[in-house]
Image 1: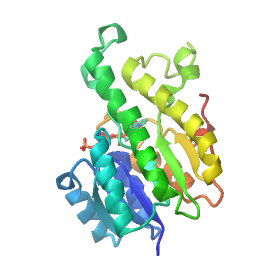
Image 2 (image 1 turned 90 degrees about the horizontal axis):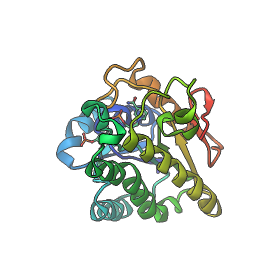
Image 3 (image 1 turned 90 degrees about the vertical axis):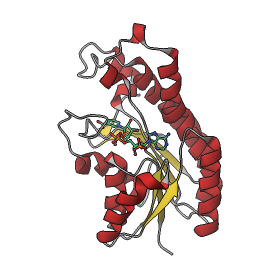
Length: 240
Ligand code: NAP
């Protein structure tokens, strides 16, 4: 049976491109989307390229949906080898929100998807990952979640001061560290990555395209001996 990869938020953007690149190596890619209506076009496009792509309904901010997806994948495939926690939201760029004006609602919504959602997926998929011979979790974070970058006046990201998004990625990184230590006993590697600033709905005026953004995720997903507990981009380590 081929390697099984679940990518959340794979109906578009970086997640879709990760699915395309992994799928083109022969990996079976499970296209996570909030509902199957959102993934239909993505699955059809990947199948046209000869990729074994299957739709998976999974709204990461809804634990019942995450549990239902884990049950269905367990029945259909019995395991997951690669989990890419990619689903994420960033609403402050569009709204131009300054931290002092941030609504509690926006902060909660951002954490619901980027932090609690990622955690829910890990929690309910660990039993399936444990059945893999080389299980790995890749959390799609951002240099914007680096406390080092945020607090360094000389860093190019210093001025990108989005309290909800940045804090959500910092929290996601903390989960990466905690879970990498705990899941080492289960041989499951857990890493955070930054794809760089990529042209998608989340970064419309960005310099990089999704092909470049997906690269670091695909490298970790397919590496023979992945590290664990790291935060990396395409150039190597990112400061926490
Ligand atoms: P995108 O094009 O907006 O894609 C985000 C994906 O996440 C979409 O498929 C979206 O589904 C999905 N999603 C959002 N909330 C969800 C939920 N509750 N349940 C399931 N899926 C959900 O953004 P992107 O740029 O590709 O971002 C992908 C990841 O990269 C995010 O974690 C983002 O923070 C991170 N990142 C992006 C950049 C960048 O420059 N683009 C830089 C650093 C990190 P819908 O279509 O249903 O909304």
